[in-house]
Length: 215
Image (cartoon, rainbow, N blue to C red):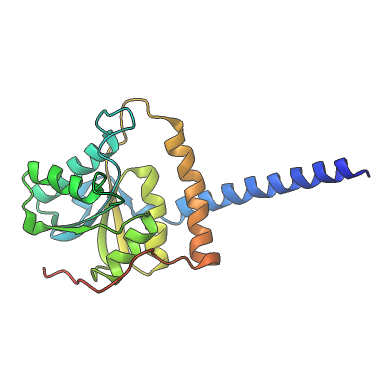
C-alpha cells in the first residue's frame, strides 16, 4: 500500500470515528435528559428560581432575535403565574456594547418583572459557565432552566453532571426559518460538553466570590 492510500485510509477511518462520536454523544445527551424537558408550566412547583440562558437580543442583520424574545416571554409568564419568584440572568458581557444579562433584565422589566426579582450573572460566557456558576456562586441547585428545546438538553446534561435538581421549561422555537447553522452548531456543542466534563475537566473562565441569593 503506497503512502497516499495509507493517508486516505487513515482519513476515512478518522472521519468515521468522528461521525460516530458526534452521533453517540448527541444520543447520550438527549436521551439522558429528555424526561426533564417540560413545555407545560403546570408541571412546575410554584415559587422556584429560574436560570435564563443568554443570547443576543438582535440577529446579525439587526432585527430582533426570536430566540431571545421567546425566552423573555416565557420567563415573564412564569413570573406572572407565580411559578418563579426569582431569576438569574446569565450571559456574555464581553464589551460595554454587548451585555446579554442587562438586555434580558431590561426586557423582563418591560414585562412587569421587578428588579428585586432579578440577579445578573455577567460571567455566563458559555452554558457550562452559567450552570456551574448558578450552583457555586449563587448557591442554587434546584432550578428551572429557560431556553429553547434544542439547547435545553445540553444545559440539563451539564446540570446532571454537577448533581443539580434541574428541569427545563422550554421557550417556543422561532416560527420563522432560522439558519440551520444554529442547530448544527448545537450538535457539536453537545459533543464538546462531554469532552469538557469527562475528559478535559473544563472550569468556568470566571468564578470569584460566592454571592448566595437572599430569597
